[in-house]
Image (cartoon, rainbow, N blue to C red):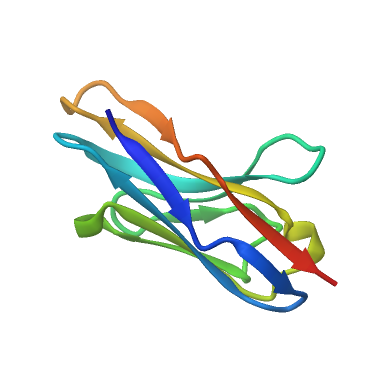
Length: 120
């Protein structure tokens, strides 16, 4: 079983920055892509960013130019650097990983979420 644990959330002022981290732990697994979703208050979970094994990245238009996703494969960790934060970035942020134990079947695992609150 794989577990993903996020950290780095908190309260920040308008225009501030936060860096989220997500570590995948377990044994005998490999990860293809890792990424982030968020769920604003009263809304559905929405895509934020993804990084494929290697350096290929994709972002939602709402965060392009402000957020940067990166990955440390040796540590099974994905990061989300968030700059120029806005109140509309307030949400619970969830990381995910596409994981396989045998290289042929893949499953999506989710973290428990970390709260990000941007005050104006």
